[in-house]
Length: 400
Image (cartoon, rainbow, N blue to C red; front, top):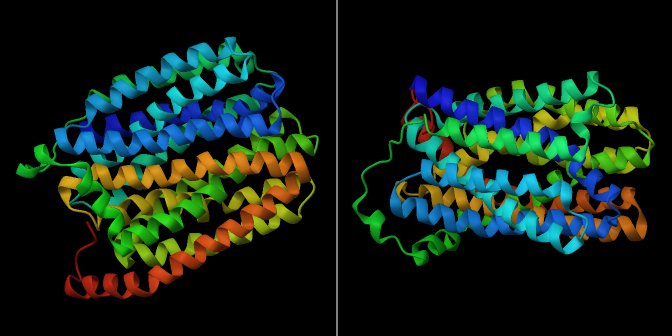
C-alpha cells in the first residue's frame, strides 16, 4: 500500500499546490482583464457546471470499465493544456470556453480519484485513510501560499508565469498517478452498467437528501471562499494579506482533515457531518457582519470545522451507501452536486455583488447554508440511529 499512498498523496499535493494560485487569484486576474463581477461569476459557474456533467459521465464510464488511472491522467493533462492558454485571454467568450474545458477535466478527475481511494482503502477506514492522504493537498496549498506571502510582489503572480506554474503542477499530478495500483473488486455486472442504474441512486431517499444538503453546503462555502479575495480587496487589503487569509484557513484545515476522518470511522459519519452543518452558518454570519480585514482573517480559523469535515467525511458517507459496482458513479454524483452548486451560485453571487455589494452576497450564502442544515438534519434523524446500530453490531471495527 505504500506505492498507493505515495501516488495519491502526491496527486493531491500537486493538484492543490496549483489551486493555491487559481483559487485566490483567478477571480482577481479576470477583474484585471476588465470583467465585471457578474462576468467573473459566469466564468466560475461554467467551470463548475461542466465539472458537474463530466463527473457523472466519467464516474459511470470508470465504473463500467473498472479502471481509474487512465481517466484521471487524461483529464489532468487536458486541463493543464487549457491553463497554458489563459494568459492570452481577453475575450469573455473565450474565457467561458476555456473554463468549460478545464472545469470538466479537473473536477471529474477528482471524483474518479475518490473512487480509487475507496477501492484501495475500503477495509482500512475509508474516511480516516482519505483524510490522511487528502491532507497532503492542504500541505501543497499552504506551501505555495506561504511562498507568495513571504515573496511579496512575486513574479509568479504575473499571468503568464502563474498559469504556466499551474499547468506544470497538473502535468506532474497526472504523471504521479501512474504509480498507483488499481484494485477494484471483480464485479461481473460492471461491463453492462447502464445510465439508468446511476439514476437509480438519486431515487434513494438517503442519497437524494444528502446530495441536496451537500449542494447547499458546498454552494455556500465555496462561493464564500472564492469571493473572499474580492471581499478583502474591497476592504483594501493587499495581495500578501489575501494570501495570508487563505494560508490561515489551510493551517486549520490540516489537523481537522485527519482527525475528523478518523472520528467519523469511530462514531459515524452523521455525527461528524453535523458539526460542519452547524459551524458553516455561524461562519457566514460573521462574514456578513464584519467589515475589516483582520476580523475576516480570524473567521478563516473555522475552515477546519467546515471544509475539512465536508471533504473528509462526505465521500465516505456516500461510499458506505452505494454498491461497489457503482462506487465511482456515487462519487461522481457527490462531485456533481458540489460542481453544480459552484456553477449556479457564482452567477447569483456576481449579480448580488453587482447590485447590492459583497456584504449582501454573504447574507445570501448564510440563508443557503441554513437551508442545507435543515435538509441534513431531516436526514440525520434516520442515518444516525442506523449508524449507531451498525457500531453496536461490530464494536471493534470501524466503518468501511
